[in-house]
Length: 243
Length: 243
Image (cartoon, rainbow over all chains, first blue to last red; front, side, top):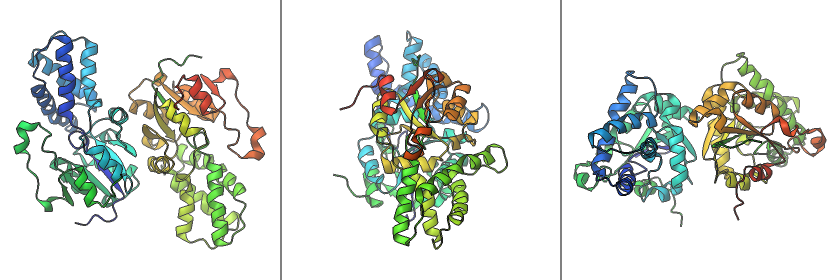
């Protein structure tokens, strides 16, 4: 494992730093109570997230022009509300639900580990979430980014190489001085292709406890680091524990 | 004064939030000691800063392609070292001095006031300094930006309107929901022209105590707010004092 000369760590966010599934379930169940609904929000969350890559693909392949995640999420949300038979929400309630992606909570290890890593590295988001979404999320949850970076700044969604290379350029670094941290191999494979260092972080609970056994961890040799979680990543990168 | 419906405040940085002159003097005098020099660093700082607008103008007018402030500062610095007869610095020492713009300290009122304002508004830099410079500066000095925004993200230096409108776009707001805060009328005039709200902050010490009397404060009616300093701005925007 060679990770010397890394100056900046850039992080995938949905699934890697924050737990999108629990956040959608949390706000959905609140809506069940206030509106007298009986929606299965775990199933809803999974279905919403499953629309994510197909939405991005439409932008990536040029079928539709650039639009940010609020717009893509809203398009999927309206279809899903119909599919799940959810009636009677006002436009304001739908819009509030759509913005649950701004209000996701970090995995329990995320903030303490980011605070450790931040003493040795510049740390930034590098998400397909747009800049404003990421800023709102960080502010609400206290995520200590030195810098909010987003695929939006390149006008290309990950895993398009422009997303990674624009971030590297804004960091004023060579690609080899930047390490992409993600729970998704697709993201890391594209990062490596663009010349970045790579760290895989295992998040077996991303799709909920029922699917924990589906979550396969790649071989140690697949990336510069294959970490059990962000605590393990901070340990391996030698960041001191902050008491 | 109408400042309702403002969601985000974007700040000019050099002169408005940080005191560039004292920072250059501080590091320059350290160099006088270690290298046995006798440079007048107050005069040097002023001369360096006076090269700033002409440098930007070359980019803005298309005489040279986009380059970031480290490159522009370095070009000016090399000429000034010659003009001031400074000999015997290694390339590493020159580069370290060039990056003093990453290591400037905030004016004493800046961080407490930004912490107040941040409870009610999204706060971001909007400087001609590049993203990496601003991130390094904020990290070193503890400036609590929710978000680092920079003219670099538009590929145009302020006061080109693209610099303001790209920031507004990334904030996902209408221009009227964004207030530009600056100590420089040129910056505010262009912001207003681009449709933003404007707040002037008086910084009579920007060019040092000798030139304090040159610093004229615009009429109250010139901008949405004309503030004596950042404490006054936070008072006028109704941000509660954090004890």
